[in-house]
Image 1 (cartoon, rainbow, N blue to C red):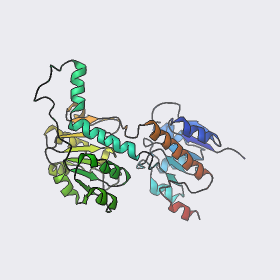
Image 2: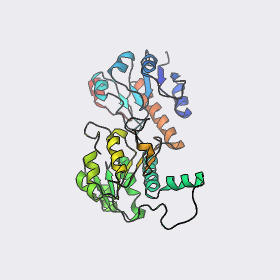
Image 3: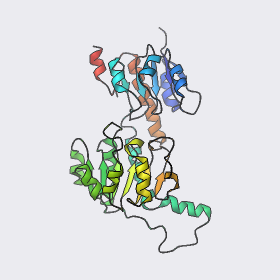
Image 4: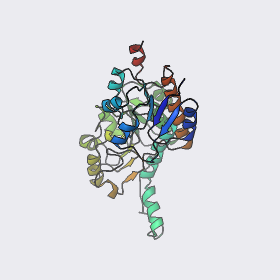
Length: 327
């Protein structure tokens, strides 16, 4: 019996590759960069399975190129890079990598929160440049954290973890979500509120929603106008949830106090003016970048793809209706 031929669109931790190589012919993007569109369409030809990254646009054109494909395992929790409707129409299972990066992402949200509130990057820069002249009572004044109101936009796995970690800082928690979260309400006394109320009352707002048509530019000029001038925005979800041009204007005009960003609307680029502002902390989409998280993502993606290749149900399938379609 021939070994399935699969493609991995960028090198992932070796543990995942080793698992795949036990039963598959594995081809990997040799460059440490995203594939160009032409390279992607060429690479997926005649492959039975593909491990894709969030930088890979898997649409009808890509699926046409991957003639004979059995499914896609996305090395990410989010899957806005994949046309899920089209994959389902074709009977192709698609999986993601939930759970294994929940804590790492929540921790990164907290890292950004503290970094922007306490102006860590600014004071670090002053030390490195040798411009600090010694302690002064008005230097690098930031925002308090303990006792301040934390707003969680999207109380799923990551949003809930972010909120639960606030307990030690005695922060009242507000949240918005499609459904109530009994865990947050029981353990923190959190309140589910309308989006506008969360904007108006929160001192810190942390975004944890997927990128959908209804969440694109959820944070726009109007949203920023409803936030406190002393409030901070944290985004470890997806860049286009925030209108980055509107954010620059809000930060420049001190409509809000600051922002901590790990994701960007036009990733890997930032909109004009963002990098010039001191009241924003920018990291390079590193929320899941711990050794254990990235390794477990690789193992999860590999196990999902192996199940797809065997005709079995992928453990983390995000379009399970394909199994009904395929009987």
